[in-house]
Length: 378
Image (cartoon, one colour):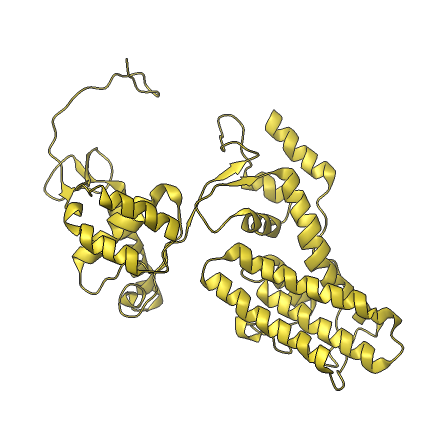
């Protein structure tokens, strides 16, 4: 016999009057919008088109509860949370705009670009219900332009569960590791799809140590140490040859490609592009061996080019690893506000003195990972 899992009470049958949103009348409009908007995630669109094909039913938007947003004139009735919650997106924008002296309509009407980031469990509400509401209210409102949708994050092959002590609190995490390590790892394991991702402590250690530390961090530290050994002064390049000019072009190309990846919500691929930039210059350093250079021009050109790559990394990493980016810019004494467009510009002018190099990242130890895994077993 069915019963409530919380209080053991048995369900009873009741009669109730409900309010419905006539979703069934908007099937054609929604299908047209889903098919024509190429920014929407195709796997989700295909799933919802099948749902529309089976026939959309009118949507019950009322609940018999004593908490929630009351339905005017009908005591004891409140709006279903996923009917009023998206409206809160607009009302919160209005509140913010009023505080800042901005026009809220710039963010919801006219030529604005609307993006909703969601989990796969609320695709109906954001791909069907909310766009339908915006279509019907009119008054210049437009449906979202893009709705990046992702799967769930699991922990070592299992669902997160606080009651079963199968979780990691952010407070515990931040006492053990930098915030940017988590940002890096979760970005690298999250696919551009609704497929679930798995957080494994050992994999976390491997990705941080073998990619973030060994590639990006290693290149930055090698470069700054070499500049320190050459007087801690950014050298002035002399007559860059074709191969050296090509390296500057690689930096410019990466600025564009990473920017495009971020704009299209391919965050993992964007971070991989940044890794490849660090790898390219790591390889260049190893091949040129500037510590062996006897000709000052070749040495100066090499260190100058690498300093350009270091500052480019500081800018390109800023959306991904904001704390590390800020730390690096501070270490380089770059105080100006740096925008994305300056990633391939000369941010460290020849003749500028830099401070002693400090490692930007540190390896995650076996002992620290062991401690985290043991916490899950308790």
